[in-house]
Length: 240
Image 1 (cartoon, rainbow, N blue to C red):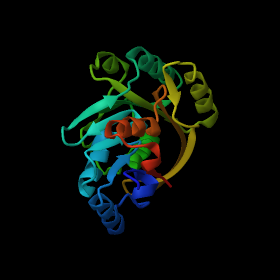
Image 2 (cartoon, rainbow, N blue to C red):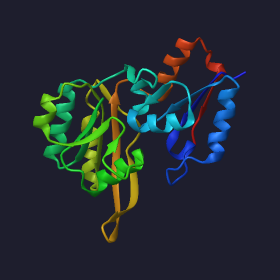
Image 3 (cartoon, rainbow, N blue to C red):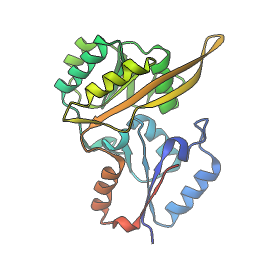
């Protein structure tokens, strides 16, 4: 019998418009009523995942930031996480600034960007299903490298994105040299139609996520099932 169900959020649990269907709510409720742990696993920041977890009354733990952090809803805190050291973050930000690459630096409390522009804003809203600039405990902070140098909170991941594919590819290849980080996956191309006042703007941009070394959702799942004394063959992971 399965004892642990890990469910991805975007493109799996949620509809394409970001809504949670009543059908999925009812199915998850029945699974929980049968004594199975249901844990949300996502690339989203903790505040955004927590909003969905509370609607479903799932397990107290959530896997966020593509496995970089595990959050305890009951205690309202991160219980385990892996971070990127500040020197590496500053070097990456320097590289982005020098080459006009857009970046988002995620700490445990905020998301730091110097200029969102249309492409970064569309990416962020898609991942966090936002109509405003607040997502739980994660707030967008418009600031540059000087601010990052003063930040006390740990750095959990970085997103880089740009419309110029050749330049972008060159920068991403340079970022691979850092031993303490790795690309979550090969760079993606995203096409978005976003509203800007009275008109819609079609944008196309490339993006990639940089995470601490050896971080992924499965490693976070292994941490939890070890804590619960659950065997790997008693786990179901759902992702479309």
